[in-house]
Length: 482
Image (cartoon, rainbow, N blue to C red; front, side, top):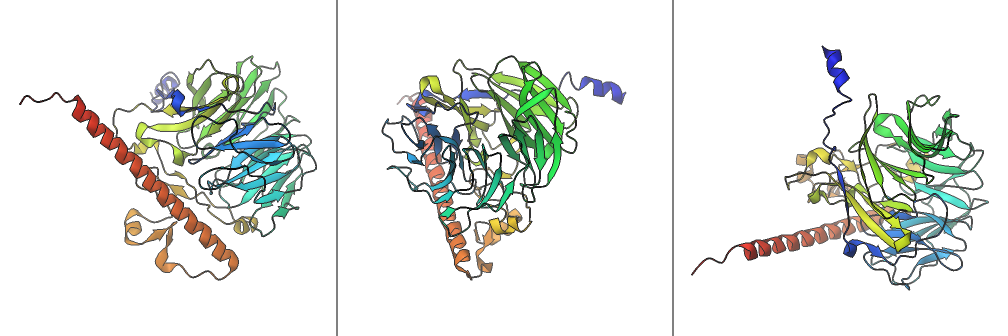
């Protein structure tokens, strides 16, 4: 009897995400007049956080990117323009919304401090400059749980690990160099706690390694699947790759994290040529596939049992995308049940179009079931701790409006009884003993002030929305006869 029941499962699956739909932003909410880069690199060219959007631009001489807050872009908008060659990748620091890294054809990686009110005049001097690569640097990634640890890779085939927690402005030596690759690294992906790093490479191999020690754990060399992008699906113990089949069809594959000898599944998508950018949301187990040059975004649900990947539907647009930015979870609009937000780079229109993925719900109250605790903007450990061999899961936060607090292992009751600043009990805070500790405390305090300001802004917006709603209700009510 049980077997009979099991056989029906693939034909009809109960899922709260079956009806997720894509909602493109109105013209007023798009970024218009953006001179998006003409680079042919298969990168996203765009990075987003709750405060700013950064996009790599086309410019005469050197390399630059824009940092935007809203709306239509002035052709003379100031830029971050300290590179001598084209910028190839930009990434915001996950623990500091005012810190962004960029890498370039000029062989350097630069880390920039963005003023609280945005870029009001050209910025040419970086906070840190990293000089270790011998050829152009094509990709950068921040460590997901350790503060101020940055990874970079380029056309010298090396992956370099940088510790930014130091006094030097120019850093010439990475703390580690990983030299397993025989060609250009095409993508890098961490697991949740940053103890594993997966890469794809032009030599067709998918590699899984320990980033700190550099130990190579697994290597996939599949003749029938040429991978270009990889993601570690941490909570599934799987790897996902997108690439091409032997016959050059676009193809996706799923792999067992502990055995990369053969894929669990390989599926052809179509015969188009643009690279597939994959995005995974561990909170909903949803996987999004956006093709370069496509107008559509396909999305799926991943499960730990066969057939593993379940097609939901696709969002279609007649405007092709060149790259994509993704808003971190803490920047989503939970009141409209938004579970993911893309920023589509549409070069033919010089436009960046926000696209919200929404779970349709009738209730307007907070939907706990689609918003589990999620990684927040606090590091779980310092650069020194991570370099000393410690791995820690990310510090989680609730997305519930008004919560605004990261989970630091306290129950709600405990939390309400103690004054908490950045998850620390103020009564137990010892005074800083070293200059470094003082600097860290100062940065934490600054972050706390920013967070409280943000909370106030959110409340102000909510008050305005409620005032408008009350006004609308009053206006829509028929005038009672005197």
